[in-house]
Amino acid sequence: MATLNKVFLIGNLTRDPELKYTANGTGIVRFGLAVNRTYNLRGNPRDPNNQDGEKKETCFLDITAWDKLAEVCNEHLSKGRLIFVEGRLQYQSWESDDGTKRSKIEVVAQNIQFLGGKSDDQNDNEEGDDSDVPF
Image (cartoon, rainbow, N blue to C red):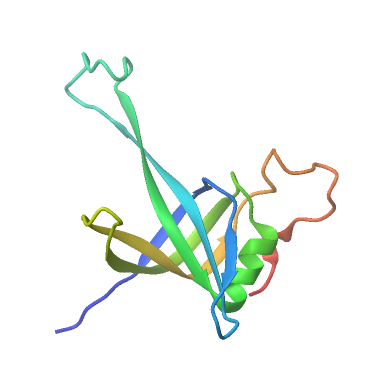
């Protein structure tokens, strides 16, 4: 039986990338991504969350990238930047300090494209747009 583990996401960084290196020198970067979804509530005009019938939800995800992609992300990305991520889901489990079992699903990025211009919190006087940086 065939299987597939592939995700495509467009969202904004919720925090600046954090670059670290493994013992053998391989780069690994981690950052958060917020992906928004807007939809209409049909047949429920009295929804207390939104008077016009439109509702918005946000999904917060942890993204990890490796090697050269990690270094490029660390150099060119910052909080608020809009990006496209292509990757796969990875399950992690561990035991916390107090003995409780914890788990999460993160996205391991295989390709990232920078969308739009630089975010508003970056210097507007910087020349060029790095959205076509190859990696």
